[in-house]
Image (tube, rainbow, N blue to C red):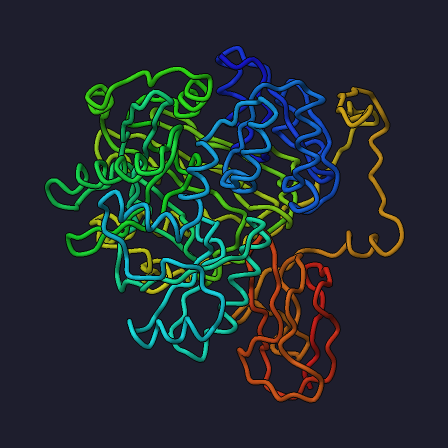
Length: 590
């Protein structure tokens, strides 16, 4: 068994791995960026090491900094979590070449299955049907136009080395190709460090069904359960459930067998997920995620299997603890997982909502679990994914699980940031969802979220104590130590230009798209903190109401900022690469 594990990630998944490792008696090591210095995963770990930097590229995607932390800590295993380096074969090789166990699949399997193009070839080799699309990388807009003209529109542009909907763009006509391609490549590069893309036919009303598999280093494989992940926005999941139901007799078993064949085709071991598209009684291989999935807990609650524990045991060289028959015998009831994201779903826009969580009350009760990455007082940064935590609920059957999830969500309280909870409740209460009639496009095309309003900011606290306990950190040669002290409870005051920015209240979005500005004043404001990745207008240009004037990246998602007034551009106040705060004016229209 491994003795000391370094978690090369942050947030909720780092917390999840730390807890599982501790239950096995394994020492845990956290790594952190400057912004995550006092985050929950750092506080829970036995040791912590600074990576430096703020953005993912400067910290969690800094291979040399992570390798240095491995050497300094003496870790004999590394868990990559999900996102960041979890599907990066070069990172896995760098780990294993040091004689350190990578708690994931072998690098060769990541190479083949982590690249969505070669994974399609592997699926075909294993006998799984695939959605029509390219089996080579796409490098030009003309290739996409030719594919769309041949197979029909819409077409999905997808990140070859990504997952979770990041870097995916749906193109509905040839005129949209260039902008969509550029955006997909930018998002893919920002989130996964690679910008290769491929294309597929985009099905009209599909369900997203995936299979959790685990293999060991002795040639044993099991598929643990299916999951339905069709409740999505921006091709990213909101609600997942296990098992997938209403697919017809024999479909789930056929998917499970196809998933194992695909894994065997590339010599895969450890935990992985094979994703399928299901429509009208047919299923097609979509991709394989060569890592633990965000939604793995919903499989755990219907089986009683700790998948992170299994990952660690497999990486330690142990055989799988169960056979396929034993896994099947452990399945009972129905599970639902809800992702609580820091997003404002008002009007169906799902705008990122970075900020400090001032209040967080999580639900409890029979069959309820909450996996958190934050606690009250922690800050959700614009630079990282916006997953605050995950609500996982078990019920004896699907209707019971839905009712219990609604009850739990209605008990939950979050202040300081907007969350997706109002949208989650709207989904769970809708007759289409309860009748299993939704698809991956249902949230954006059918669900009415127009009645959801942005949350009001909480009132300021009163009655401060003269002295309070403060926990701070000291770094010695990059290693983090906690220091406790009692100090006067005086507020921190920002100096220089940051002072004005710190006092500026966050604003919700108004109007269409993502722009701001009171009653169409002509001042186009951004509704959140972020980075300008593209300016779409210039001084003197005529614009219409709802026309995009720039593209803002926040929490790894691109958002079009739109004009609320028709007129002529009088001033462009930003350029590509500028960092802006909530309420900043980016364009003036006269």
